[in-house]
Image (cartoon, rainbow, N blue to C red):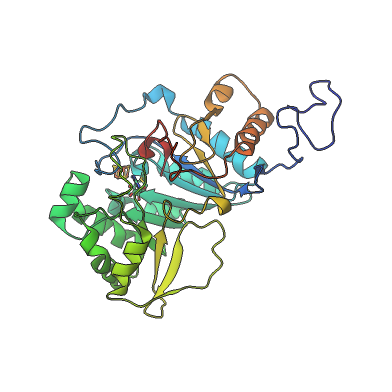
Length: 353
Ligand code: SAM
Ligand code: SF4
């Protein structure tokens, strides 16, 4: 709410809520960053149980009535694109393919003006059947998570024997023209860290772009240990045993991956060093959970409840203003290496990875 609306003397370009905030419609913060990339968790549920993400028995899933309906979700996405300058949408979860009506949500997002760039992060289960419909609905790019090429290891890491579904999903995504199809891989010490080169060889051979992600302290079981994590430095060392990697020279912007040409290109590989080489200074993300909470960071310890506003009858202007306020308070960095670091209460699967 602005000072004028409250009947207070207006100081030009500031709001009562955020004194000093320039009069800017976008999602700016006090460090000069602008959030234009919205990550949307469509569900906290999943059909895999990756050991670094959730326990074998799963989690207490969010009750259905707490989850935003498609109409509520689309109202927030519309406000983000139309009023807040968001131009990239990434749908994730949990497992986004488990959300009923996913294709409808994507089609409605693709119809927004200006048309946002739309991507999806999925574990690939069931993707083979849906890749074409997803592309037709408006998905521009897709990331499929796959940590190993070995069936037994896949079953151990994800606690489900579904590697062939993921491989079929990858191929279907490529056939549907969702290029470049990216593969997300988390390396775990003593489990799949000897597969870095094999995974890259596979990706290059099949025309997928591989991205290694450093394991982060976001698992529900709080089992992450800094000393056990495979660092970006180690990943590069392993890859260098078989491949020549050179920085691809492209402007990185807010992109988290450091990208390298593989053996001179055109194939590329990315390394996302969230822990050892944080990129918070260039972060351009804002996040929305499946129950309508805005988070300014994966590691934020506070959330802003847009669902309560929606269900309480707030108008679009008020919702937009609250979202701006939430992002204005974004902290400088995630602080994983700070002695006082505290893992957020929600795990990655409930925030949206
Ligand atoms: N279920 C979908 C999938 O697996 O692609 C989307 C959600 S998942 C949380 C998104 C990405 O986060 C996946 O690539 C997954 O490997 C990654 N991820 C999950 N837990 C992680 C952790 N503790 N550290 C780093 N990456 C993690
Ligand atoms: Fe599910 Fe993705 Fe978490 Fe694996 S990483 S358990 S696929 S949400």
